[in-house]
Amino acid sequence: MRIGIYGGTFSPVHNGHISAARAFMEQMWLDVLYVIPTGVSPHKQMDGEVTSADRLQMCRLAFEGEGGIDGVIVSDMEIKREGKSYTVETLRQLYREGDRLFFLCGTDMLLTLDKWREPEEIFRLCYPVYVRRESDGELDAVIVEKLKEYKEKYGKNVMRVVTEPVEISSSEIRNMTSRGEDISNLVPTAVADYIKSKGLYQNVK
Image (tube, rainbow, N blue to C red):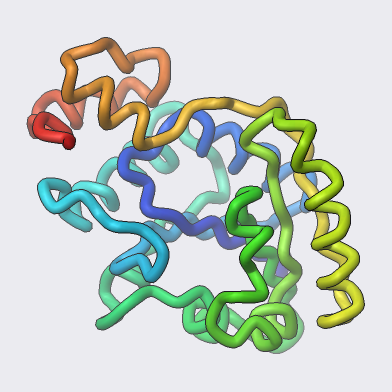
């Protein structure tokens, strides 16, 4: 089995996430893709007003609902796990002898992967894959140097998923929502309806 892993806070999940997931599945020839909302992120401050259950439900609406992606499983494994959500623990939980795990990360995550918990184990258990969510050409040389460093240090090439960058972030969408602006063209319809019905992101600072 070729198994993809796509984690994140997904607060909220947006069209950029969907686009990246589709390209990931197609270009890495995945049999299944696990979308895994973070429980307690070691890297990001979470929005107190939005629960893990909210983020999980938005992912299910986006990926498993109408207009979703075949082969995607939205998992609550990190939400159910106590303590901070470390990628290495998720990889250990999903790893089976004979399977190949592919872990998708954005540019910011790619450039700090060697600072994560047990990076050697992360590279042993999976094939890291990155996707550019921005069109900043100044990062090209930085990325090339980092990929070379990872190859020398961990013995694996980091692959790239090529897709048109969708330059929108969850934080921008949260801010737009708090200002009463329309986000219907940035997130799946079911997610926009859920955010409105639950009154999420109304008090973003």
